[in-house]
Amino acid sequence: MSDRSPSPGLARRTLLQAAVGTPVAAAAVLGAQPAQAAEAAGGPADAESPRFTLAVVPDTQYLFDEGGSDPEPVRATFRHVIDRRREDGIVFLAHLGDVTEHGTTTEMRLADDVFRTIDGRMPYSVLGGNHDVSGDDQRGDTPYLRTFGPRRFARSATYQGSSPDGYNSFHIFRAAGRQWLLLALDWRVSDAGIAWTKGVLDAHRGLPTILTTHDLVYPEDGGGAHLSDHGQRLWDQVIRRHDQIFLAMGGHYWPTGRTTLTNDHGNPVDLHITNYQDRYYGGAGMLRYYAFDLARGVIDVSTFSPWLQARRDPTALEAETHELTGDTDRFTVEVDFDRRFPPAPLPARPAAKVVIPGTVAYWRFDGEGLTGADGSPVAAGAVARDLSGNGNDLTVTRLHDGPADVLTFSADHHRAAPGHGSLRFDGGQNPDRGAVLRTSASAPLARARFENGYTIETFIKLPDPFVGDHAFMGILSWEGRSGDAGKTSGWSQDEPTCSLNLSGERFLQFVVYPVDRDADPTSWSHALPVGRWTHVAVVNDGRRTVTYVDGSRIARNAAEDSKGITTLGKPFAIGGTQFAEKYGQGYYGWLGDTRIVSRALRPDQFLTR
Image (cartoon, helix red, strand yellow):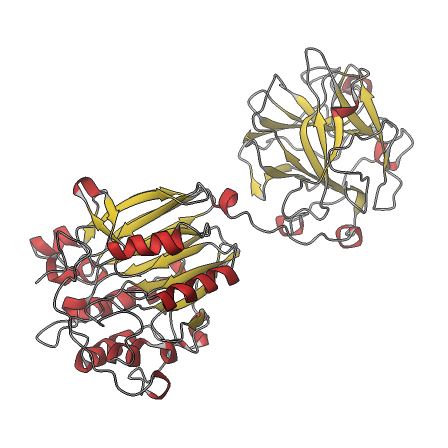
């Protein structure tokens, strides 16, 4: 008799009535080797990488049936997860309940033996399904609880606790540079279980949360899904109220399906059915990957059977089942993680930690540098001190008698910037407007030549929407004409000897006239994003120049040799680029910490580190 029923509110079958025996605290645990904290060994190579995988195993009941079964597919799945943990970035495994067919002591012993494959080697969760237990989570002692209760997970690095009854638990794991909460809830959560769940969520506000349970949504034609009676209860009392829950999944029903609902905060929540017990060989230990990619803002979902994929000479049925590619088995979910769960800013770092050997100049726009109230105008004549102590102070000048709000203070900043503040420039053209911050002509930077190499870094953010024509606006530059330095082979003798600009397509352009030749090696980036902070670094080792965007090397770096920067004893400026020794439009956007170092830095030495 299957678990499917026309009415999802009805019991799915006559449930095995497990006897309630000794209290949970005194019950003997069948799993003699609980998960160990050593499970962290052999884990994903980089917990800070924006990509990681959550592995999900649904209903395995037909493979743990004392009437006749074969648990080898599940064992093969667990071995695959362990073997591929590092390569696939697997950080956690979640079982969705109905571990066994009848929930007997014999079946639980068999399951215990198979789950020992991952004990101490992979953090995981298990929850009770209707074939494992009966009633709600106040049922007392059961063979399931003695096998998969709190004592089994007590030494797991991710396990954080269980409800007093022992049937609901939660784990916290680290991936993509942040912590994630996973709830493993019983197939029938009582009022006490609901209260416990709310307490866990309230105690961990802000942690992106995945809710797992056995009975959540049931399928509809076309691959969709509807909340079951139990799912509706969880939705009304827990999921819709807690914005941190962005993904919920269950098994119990088939075929697979999915839907997206909107919570009370106006944000989407994806709800999925994952269950393959109706497929060949009781699901053949089917494994679902939820491959998170925070850089792309997606979760790529795939489904396959490691046991069947290992077949050297598969039968026709094995070959057609080893990987499932239907619309509800392989798909992509879009999640704007940065908007929904913005990472906390890193602590500000004092200037003394940033002024490394070789630092020629360093400016910031917070409490340690030029600073003011958020949104307030920066006065003409205001001075941004060179925090390196080398005397390359910057003085504010408004261009073309621009209004006060053409340059304002901002509390906005790149998450990894040492200084927690920036300047907001409102430059433009037709008519030209803007503001620049300039050194004096006598500042050391005005005549520095950097023949042994240099690194120029800054943080910028372009407005969203990016309104107006800002083609080839300047970000930073040295003043003066390249022609006056005897450089005649470039685009124009009226352009300055070194500048960082932005094209009409939002491509960075770094152009420099080297000291040792009449040439203008020029580098071009890809189109920069709008509405988010970007770190830019231009690195020269005394021979070649390489530009980095957010720590990644761009493709179109200048091929020509480039030694040093030709300077003319004229001011260095932030916020604009001269042409024929005159400023036209100014920079449009935010600009944060800026540092110049007289040597080539590695990416792990940039301001973002």
